[in-house]
Image (cartoon, rainbow, N blue to C red; front, side, top):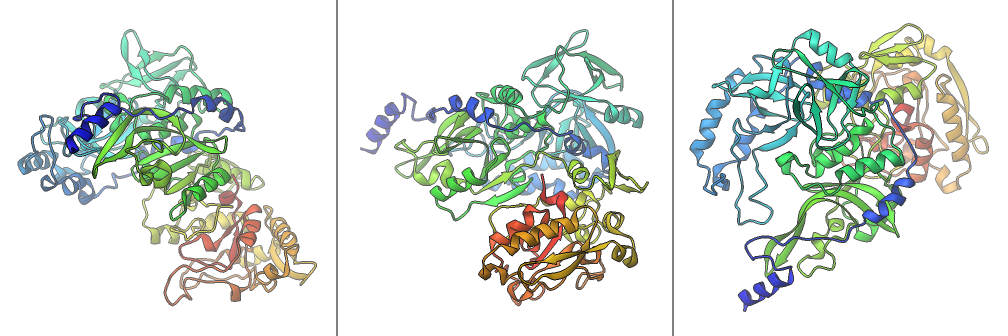
Length: 640
């Protein structure tokens, strides 16, 4: 009877054999895209954030990878878990041991050279082209899920070269998004002169898949998202093994980054749609996170490579523990079309807006989980589509718990403005420009933007660079949730002193009076008069002044503003020292150092938090080291 039922269902699913997963074709919402795209407000950025991230391997002094970190594939992909090769035979321990010996990790970091890729290639987890599969009989495993495939990597990508394998055939490298093995033939170390030539050259980005790059002959194909340096406005170039550069005339090069407009959005989405699914860039195709990454690249917005990292790349909103109806409402309310990622374990999607009240997403998906008589399967989608979040809802083999909407855990709102641009917008009276890793102030002061050091959490808070102040995106105006990071808690002392004063006396000379709750307490508070700080606090006060009495109880007895002191149990100056922070009623607040359990707790209502945030203040209640009565003026972190 069971066999008969399986045969009948096999016929029902389109005549597929029981030995292969059924092809699954969900309803397409591509027809809704033109209207959704038309409604997007045009925006643009300078691409500085993207270039900074793209060239980070050349900016770092060392590889920054320990031998234990480099060995992760040998620690994760254990033969005892069942891994197979291209002939479906088990990979024995000897296979892994031989590759471990060939990897030559005793030489890790010995070269430490800047290098560049010469052609399109694949970053591998082990130094071999041979694949590594889980059981072919297991749903969602076997081909095409090669666990030796880390990611596709394009030509002309900067990498840090660590060392070569013992036979010299493979190079261990760190790219902007990952580390692993490349064939030695596809990269070359470069000298400082060529590095500077590439860094300083204007850039263009390929905007169409399978774009042929031709010099005096065909060189290769390039995909959308390939960044190339320019010799002149019509000619890009690529590097050769001998460090000579080959000119690449381009037919219609576009200035990069593109502004995000209906025209450019339409072009990029149409280029990405219907592309076959490619695990880790297999067969030169994209998977889910490669699609989202390459969607943003033409607009100068950098994303990490994998879905788990992408969900942490900007302002994060948890959707866990919500009903499906509540999730849709949250997405529709807080999601920004074409600037919002929706995450579920192992998959990421781009939110495009709502169509007839239903959230619509773009994503490149392998398939959807199915279940038959207790056996898990896959309905294969296998390409980039436009869908709702109810894919499979009407299918007899798809359980409601396996719907995309049921599995969505979070959304991430991407800020298209780079940190450098946000600093310029927040402090135009102080900052004249930010170039070559230097923040230039109108008074002649020059400060390093990035110190190039990798830091653990404690070091980052103790001695952050200006760049480090943006280490965790601040989720302004989002729902109040238990935080997992400390957005806005890192402060570069030299930066704040240049803005607000180097000494107690200088700071105090620039303080002004803010009338706090003028219709109620009318208290005089001292706050810094520069860069809109006092003006912003007065606007907050006026908005709070109109609140009902039950909310005024949280703010009508502030604990203080200016107070030249260090942060408790540290040597760092408090934001209060600069006259840019206020503590509201401490009897209504919670502080992590006062907590007996260390568990997050908050009493401050959302209405009050959002009033402060609308005027450029960060809230200490969004820190995992919580300080819920604390607000400080940091417009570069809050405002887009």
